Structures are given as C-alpha cells and as structure tokens.
Amino acid sequence: LAENKPISVAVAGARGKMGREALRALEMDKRFQVAGVLVRNRHDDVDDTYPAFDDAQALLSTLQPDVWLDLTDANSVVRHVDLALSHGVRTVVGATGYTDEDLARWTAICEENQLGAVVAPNFAIGALLMIRFAEEASKFFESVEIIELHHDGKRDAPSGTAKRTAKAIAQARQGAHSDVEAESRNLTPETVADASRGQALHGIHVHSVRLPGLVAHQEVIFGGTGEVLTIRHDSLSRASFMPGVLTACERVMNLRSLVYGLEHLLF
Ligand code: NAP
Image 1 (cartoon, rainbow, N blue to C red):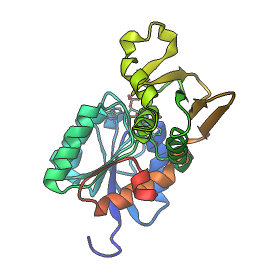
Image 2: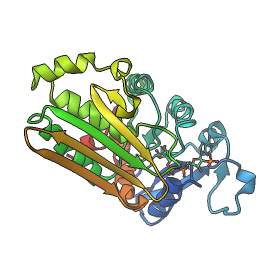
Image 3: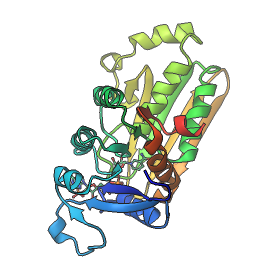
C-alpha cells in the first residue's frame, strides 16, 4: 500500500448496532475509508453515503476492499468469512457464532495464502484483561464458573467471549491441578444432570443470561477455601469495542496468518 493511502474497509452488518458504531468510528479516523457496506436490503437504504450491497460476493468483486469487517451475526458470519478469504481479502471477524472447525479452516486458508485475518471474540480492552487475569487466577484456584450476560437480541450462546475465556483458563491450568483435570474429563454436558448448571466448556460451567437493558457483561468466579474471587467486566456501550475494532483493521494489514484473540496484538 502506498504511504498515507487510507485502508479501505467494507463493513458487513452496517445497519446493526455494532455496524453503526463502527461506521462512526471509521469515519472519524483518517487511517481508514469506508469502501462500502453490506446491508440486508440495499433498496431500503435511505442513507446513500457509501456504496451499499446486499450481496457479499458482488461487494467483494466490485469494491475489492483492503479489509472485510464482519459485524453481522451467527447466521451469516461463516459464509461471509469463507467468501472474503476466497477473494484474498484480509478479514476482521467481530461477529460470533462460528465453530472451532470454522476457525481451523480459516486458519489453514490464511496460512496457505499468507493472508492476514483477526478473529476477535471481544474487542474491549477490559474484557481482554479480564481473560488475562482469569488465566492467572486459574493457577491458584481449582474451581471456576463463568456467567455471561448479554442483551436479548444476541443470537448465539454461550458468547464468544465466554468460550474464549473457558479455553484460556483450561490452557493456563494444564498441569496446575491434576485432580481438577481428572474431574474435568468426566464433566461433559451429558453428565451434568441438572440443565440449570449451564453448559460445560473445557470442564467449566458457563451460564448465559439474555435480558433487555444489558449490553455485554461477564463474571469469572473462582471458589477456594473460605474465599471467592470474582473478576467482572462490563461493556456499558458499544463504544467500548471501537478502539479494538480500529486496531484490528489496521494491524491485519501487516499479518500473514490468522490471529484468534485481539490480545495477541496488544499484550
Ligand atoms: P445486530 O444489531 O443484530 O446487527 C447485526 C446486523 O447484521 C443486522 O443489521 C443484520 O440484519 C445484519 N446482517 C446479518 N446477516 C446479514 C447478511 N447476510 N447481509 C446483510 N446484513 C446482515 O447485532 P450487534 O449487536 O450489532 O452484533 C453483531 C455481531 O457482533 C454479533 O455476532 C455479536 O455477538 C457480535 N459482537 C461482537 C463483539 C466483539 O467485541 N467481538 C461485541 C459486540 C457484539 P437483520 O437485522 O436484517 O438480520
């Protein structure tokens, strides 16, 4: 890229809550220009500030953006990311609801084509620190549960952040508590008799709350002998995600592989 040339970003899901916030953030930052937007039905779009498409394939072929920023939802994100990567377009994935298999496939495609991608279950710096502190605490506490709380419009559960947290804790405590690991091996969803105990991810119970009024919140609760440690993060507005969105859109330009978790670019 020529020096000083802004990075062109296509925003998928531009009429959603995250999409609108991202458009505002990109507009205000001279490092970027919005190449175009993917919306549900472009003919309904009264705002013609940017080229609007309702077909991802058409947008990618026509605009050839530097970055595909996906802020759609669990129903669309996988198809979009497959498509963007097949067009050789660097991709920042903010939407959640993809599987470990999707992630593995995208990682392989990026590796093979030396293509940059950032898959970020959470863009908020406080949430990334929460995961980091939870990793540290998990070396000292044998028992932990996660409660994630989101607005009632969220389509996937458990949240991408809860999945990321559970995986990070499981990795951090490998070898730290042999008795807990033995217990974890027996803790599959089938053996959790009571459904109200939540879903077991990597042997960690995860509880999902969906209510109007909430934005994105999570508690990681560690239980020890006569003490409890709670690490809590609250995103009070979607503005909390925007510095991370912009960092991902900039840093993806220099990547040659897929990075899962924005923390790997920050810490
Ligand atoms: P939202 O308000 O429902 O926005 C999603 C938007 O994407 C909607 O406007 C939806 O249109 C649109 N969309 C979905 N599929 C589409 C398609 N195929 N073509 C065109 N538009 C499509 O949800 P949100 O709160 O903005 O969240 C968006 C995603 O980001 C969710 O997956 C959420 O979990 C995730 N999220 C991630 C972070 C993070 O830090 N990584 C933070 C917050 C949220 P319709 O309404 O017509 O379906």
